[in-house]
Amino acid sequence: MANGTTRKKGASGKGAVKAARGRSVVTQKHTPWGTIIGVVVVVCLLAGVVTYYLVKSAPQREQKSRDEAAAAFAPSASNPDPSKKIPGVVTKQYAGSVHILPTERVAYDQSPPFGGPHDGYWASCTGVVYPTAVRNENMVHALEHGTVWIAYNPDQVKGDELAQLSARVKGKPYTMMSPYPGLDKPISLQSWGHQLKLDKADDPRIDQFIAALRTNPNGVYPEIGASCDALGPGQFDPANPPPFDPSKPGPDAKPMDYKGSTGAANEQTGMPGGQ
Image (cartoon, rainbow, N blue to C red):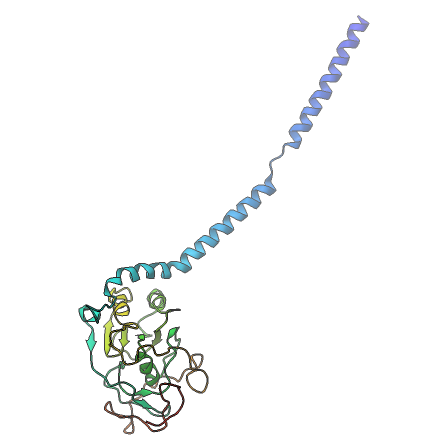
């Protein structure tokens, strides 16, 4: 009996040790909260990055679709000026290469102007979105080089509509955009000898106008191949452009049939020369 009792106690002791080990293993298999939290943080960060990208890139992605839809308005030898098929486009004939001095004004026949005498220094038109209104005489010169200028009424175009217009210009050569105080329509597009005024930034005619007229090689603007690069301080500085003058031109303003000012910058060098 004694031996039997001893064996039972031994067996009981071994069971207790085994149970203790089991409890130890169970205790060691704890939930990895640190790993889980780390994964959740990474997933949230990735979701934030993706959401930020989608929101920020939305105007560019939408613009790509608009560009594709307007591709049918690209000029060709058989259709040299597709803008003639765009409802609302106004056209006029203007003589090119008539320059004035930076201190002079032109009594333009249109507002915004889209042709006529202009400053010898062109406005930078390398996809620039100007935050403030720029002097007409410099902007018109850029049109002579094949640029499309989007002007907008700053009291009427804001927020998403402003972003839609900017997406058509930012970083795109031979385009530029600026506010135009007092504009009689929310939006006005200009290329040399062409204008289109619109009410909404999502109007497909904006993209059709750009596709038809920006650097159109078929003689719709005077100076094919001319530069749009910034001339720099002392000539035209895009970081500090000459401001728009909203006042009515005075009696000394140059008429639309003006022949040019002596000493105005010439086209080849951007430097003063005889007219």
